[in-house]
Length: 155
Image (cartoon, rainbow, N blue to C red; front, top):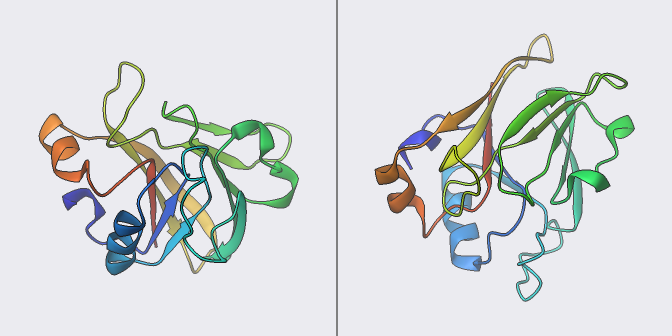
């Protein structure tokens, strides 16, 4: 939870699998979330769909669990999560930032538990930094009941 301090918005790329965890994240900061393939039995409300678009800090964001379903022509920032493997890329055709933050609770791959963080200059309406944050085992255990594929944005 310490890694979420100062977060302006939490963007979740699906597979939260818990209404209680979703509500806990909402107490920290506004949450923008898409449905993951493990969220089929949960109802998080009308704002949580398979693909979510929203504006924040002057940028258009898209969140979709599956990378191959992202529409990079329609956004400035695209977040996906299905593989639970972190990466950050800049699409060469659209100049869109694409991120999979990995997972703080159920990581796959050698990096272990991770989240992503994007820093936006809300005055200039541009991304100034994007990074994958590696969490320690202690962090992973303390957040296991709260986060699944978390991403956060701070202006």
